[in-house]
Length: 361
Image (tube, rainbow, N blue to C red; front, side):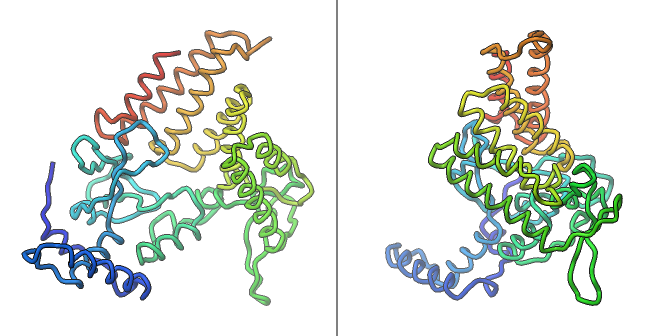
């Protein structure tokens, strides 16, 4: 384990000049109140406190609670000057997690790193469109991301799928290609199969409709109105009136499937939940690296639904062979465990969680 000192914290870069006047005024006022209550021997100036707050704002990492809950419960934040030297990438080769028992940060490789290649970690959730990632990084970290993924173009690029739309006239599987109208300076989309053209306004309208359905469904779920949320999402999902559809791997499509699976779970519709979560895993596998925590969690949720399907004996007819389903559910747990062993520190509660649940199958 490598330890650092407060002098290393002082040496960390920060962007105080990039922060809003309102933020600075609030922190300065808070610093003055804190310093008034400290003993006189604590000779720290207001500018020093503001600078420390700016470093925390820019460079801090969250320390997870020492629990198996993978939904992002944060116990505290910490400054790790050495880890702060690692740059961000939207397609990182490492991931950081915490060792809750020691209050330490652990950086682990998630992919092979060739000799002299740079080590990178994600500063934000990278399973979102390029424009959303770049906006968040600019607002919170004050830089423009130019990583390989942000510069990648073409139909095979992850961002093409995550924010892609398809031609419904060609079966809903043909990705539309964005084009620039040089005369008008506006975008439109073309289908490489049928040569059909779609305006950017139509694409934006479909995305806005999807976003509205997701927000409305989430609001119902927050009120535990799961049947209503499910109805909203089903109505959106079954609407074929538009000439285009979201690509199955579009981030809003995966969000809708995840919410639908959660609604089915809450309603006791375990077979539908299992089928939806299986679809979600397939969607995520197309855009996420193999050792992604989000993919590991998706496998765990799939295995949990499968365990309940076995318990309630929901498979019937030709799908009735319990032994086959039991082996499949065990394989889902193994997939999750393999990913989490790569990403988490040894003896992390989220590793033991998977091992414990797998024993119930």
